[in-house]
Amino acid sequence: MNIAQNSTTIETKASNTAGIPMRLEVTTLPVADVDRAKAFYANLGWRLDIDFQPDANTRAVQFTPPGSPTSIQFGSGRTTTTPGSLDGLLLVVADIVAARDDLISRGVDVGEIWHLEPGTGQVPGLDPQRRSYLSRADFTDPDGNGWQLQEITQRLPGRVTSDVAGLAELLHETAEHHGAFEAVAPPHDWWDWYAAYLDARQTGATPDDASTAADRYMADIKHIMAPG
Image 1: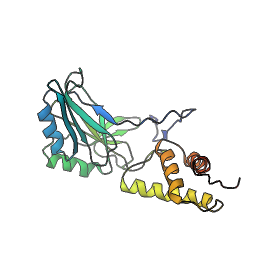
Image 2: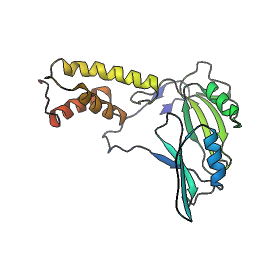
Image 3: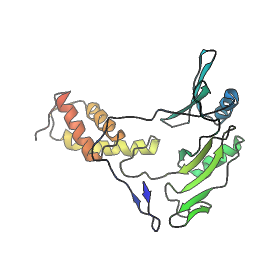
Image 4: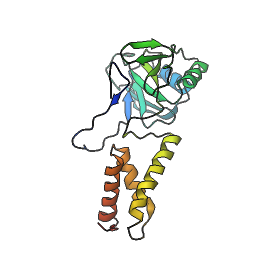
């Protein structure tokens, strides 16, 4: 993403060739006191996935924020990084005011909201137009690892969201593209085409490329071919 200094234009560039699908699953936080960190993230309302101690020197604790496909892990024997040295961890929210208020109600010391003004830099307060990606607020965990709330209400082209509104929009898009295939293809289970399309979109494909991938899946795997 590139936000031009003298405008609000956001540019995206796609790589020339698609790579093997890789999904960021977990990021490791360096902490000094595992139980203190566990209590802090549990208090945020995040889901505790594991607290696993395979031996006396190793312990892994994993939490997942509500609605997030990516989790955090911390523990003992996990990393040699200095506790509290991680910074710039982004938590994307649809309403930064509500998210900040919720954290404060849980006892978290959250800084005032600020926004990035293209051509100016950091400016106090919400972005006046509530433009996506620009409004932020900062807080840290007990070790000093830095988190930042970022308000995003409209994604960059090609990005797929996992919230209810984003999924509804994606399903509507999938139905529209499937309609072209369904109109000419032999009888088939619609969910097979949907699954292939959704998988392609979630790995970064454009709608047209996802349609091509879904058509190819139906032909190669399900042996359902639409007339060319």
